[in-house]
Length: 397
Image 1 (cartoon, rainbow, N blue to C red):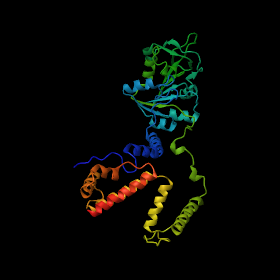
Image 2: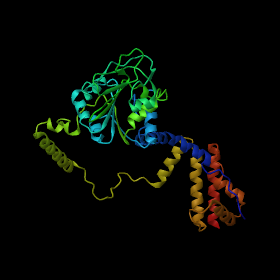
Image 3: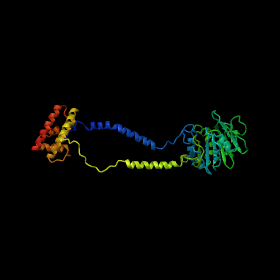
Image 4: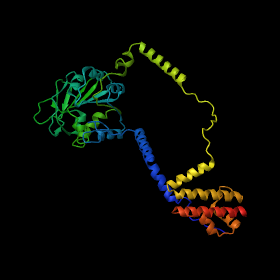
């Protein structure tokens, strides 16, 4: 005979209620662990490949120059972007182009001399002092205007300027030497003035009065793209240098004395001595763990008193479900042992064995051992008596 066990267990809970209880207990620790995991994931993720620096090759904003950089990369130009003078000078070599963007920062004379000592072709944007120093005064800046860029024709014989035809620009440069070529003059400019200049000596130097035509906003205007791409894509390697506020213009071997050179020589010896003293104190005062030993208990509590004490706790807290579950578990374990079953025997197996041993209907045995918990003290007392009778019948069999 096969008996179907009801889904209610001895303490009155179900799988759903137990899962809800576990979730209420664990949701705060799980939330904390999840936040820590998310923070760790964000920490190891690579930094975003975009910036907000003006004229930067990774800036997609209107003031950035990502469009020009992507076009150059598509044409096979390798771009090294740096904010450090030492890295720019190191990477600039013969057969490459070094782009120097001034903006709000003005490089000092030593930094400009280091740029001039490279073998790369130089393109200087919005840096009149740097441009004047690099060309020995052949190109001088008349200042960058704040007006809206206007269309200007080449008006010169420079191949790159002629290919561009017309650009939109503001500001101006002025040629003071016969070997300086200046293009794209504004309306009313004197001869030898314009927004773009070239001095081609032992080192080719190209100057832009301002960086408007380099930006994403104005690159597609008129012939700006043609002029910018021809100036920056002359070689297959481009070093894109934008000075930063914390760039001191010193190479790694010129960075000056470090912290170790500023402290007295005896400080490392004192530190080593303190470390040895700390280790010795840790060994001396450290707690040593010996073997596990049995210690006599100060008071021996009989099992009967422990059982009665637990019963009083159940009664005081009115935990009838737990008391009923304990009574049923004890009865089921003793009946299984009496009938030769394992303690881990399934409920249907135990119910069928008790049914054969006592002659009671399986439904009655199931209600006693696995039924719902009692609702009051009287029901708990009756359940205890019924379980005692059932156990006595099993022992008589």
